[in-house]
Amino acid sequence: MLAARVLCKHFEKVIIIEKDKYPSQAGSRNGVPQSNHIHVLLIKGKEILLELFPDLEKKLVAKSAHVVNLTNDVLYYGGIGYSIRFESDLTTNACTRQLLEHEIRNEIVANFPIVNILESTRATGLLIEKEHGICTGVTTLSADTNYENTILGDRVVDASGRESKTSEWLDKLGYGKPEETTINPYIGYSTCWFRSPTSQQTSGDTSSSVSYVPPVIKPTIILTSPPSIHEWE
Image (cartoon, rainbow, N blue to C red; front, top):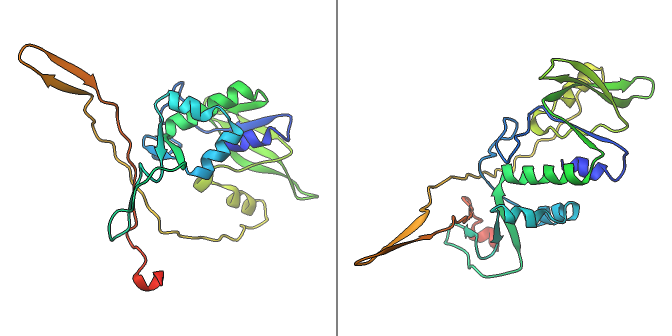
């Protein structure tokens, strides 16, 4: 979606080939791992998103996304205790991947009519103009009709992530697989859903009242292998 938004500034037509079927509302889909869990936008990521979609944050918050102060609302544990918490202007948003994707897609559909989304369709190969070695498009297969098609274009962007088949397609075409560089940052994270009390009961002699308690999102970052004293020196 973000690649399509950027390409809108340079091309007359942009086609997104999506193997999944998008839900009508914000919801999970097979092609997105961990879509049910909370995502916290990094500051730079949020800045870029707002450059592309100026109203995105407002729309996310209107649909229950949380505003998170990264120095006050996030707990950082570094092996010797928790860091000091304080207010700052480093605020970002926490929401489900489902909501984030849904709102970005709504922005694309509403404001960028040159983008055409082909759902339930997957790319199956590259089209190469042999004489000059230029990629001129892709072949596709529709899951709904089982129909194979050819899509021509001036630029092909592979945004399929870890499931990318580009190396295999290039090798099959006789170009060989590009050299790969693997960097393991040794970073992991986990999220968990907890059942939150939805009401608070107050009892008296003759009456009781119920007040709503909104859900709370509190991220925690744990440095499992903090730097040693010698490394700090």
